[in-house]
Length: 137
Image (cartoon, rainbow, N blue to C red; front, side, top):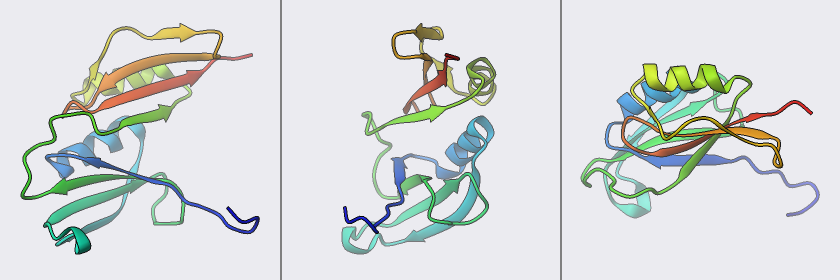
């Protein structure tokens, strides 16, 4: 990448119900809806709907998480991505996961050699998330 180039990142999670999953990720991780898009997917030629989530109120070039629904495909059946989230309070995040229909996969564990506490969980549709809290040094 050139010295003056910059990149923004986005992740698209293929889901069965973009509205339900939008509610989940907004409630659990404090994201906001910044845009809604729908159409025929251009080059892919398949109808879709997506909800773009971010930490701000608008598309500002920052990182976004997109709930992407192919309307004519069956529900995704395999993991297509592992979403990673960093939090200051993993215990509170675990409570929000459960309260919003997610499922912790085991207990919170520490990896002191990496300086983190970790909780793997599934969202209501079964997508895997890795949730990390940095340990104080």
